[in-house]
Image: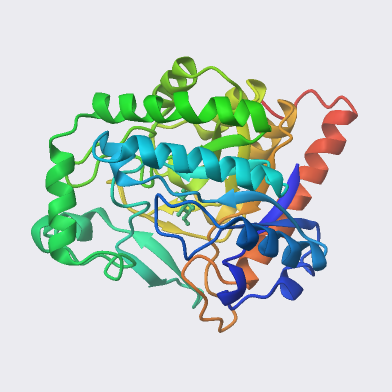
Length: 355
Ligand code: DNO
């Protein structure tokens, strides 16, 4: 596995100098943030970004994300033009050492939380989702933490209305249509597509979602069989769905060679409904068994990229929600320990380690 760290480019308050000092981190996961969704990335900017990382001894092999235009998800408008641009981006990125692209196919909202700064018992704060608070959100006058700057309420209303006419099956069909045109370019260039699961993994505001469960992923891989059609195993996203068996999914999809990227983080279920809060990575702090997840990956030959996912704000840091330095660095160190132990034990033939 290769440990990486998400970096939001030169405007990130966390520097590459800080990232390179985290033990075991070999590369950054980044993107160009000033290209309108659907556009072609400027090759000289990609080259400059890769150079910047390399100068600090860090690889830039993973891009998160090349965003998918809503026309592609809805299967309307200028989708073929946007798909052609997407394919061009894959070619450009491949020329600059990128090996894996993380993307999602969630309509409108990439992720949803009801609280960006939930104060925890230890004084840290983290992202959280309360089913009760969410039920009170008025879809016709949406104000959602983290999203108010991206859309005006009337833009959101229009998008939601457009999606209400699209079934889950149609959304899936549109995803397959997209991949059938992009994966051949990946096969040609050696880039792996790693879809990010729905976060949270259920339908919101009556709009469809299509990557929420094992059955969804099985259908996706059956529809587009190339191994370059793979997954970002985001444990916190899939894990919010309590019927998802994350350890089983880690084992199964790693064995299939479909896990190209893993976002490893823990969450804690906070009620009997769907509520959860994000915790530190350590297994006893949350509801997911991080050690079993790592053991399952290693036992099944996982050799993709890993990054610690959302951290809390700790030690007085006021970082971008989920993306401060300290707790993610602790997460990377903890995960490195789990991987090192799992790899050594399994290499010695410890047959009880990993599913
Ligand atoms: C949230 C992230 C997601 C992810 C996208 C990938 O913190 O995991 O925003 O980057 O879903 O397209």
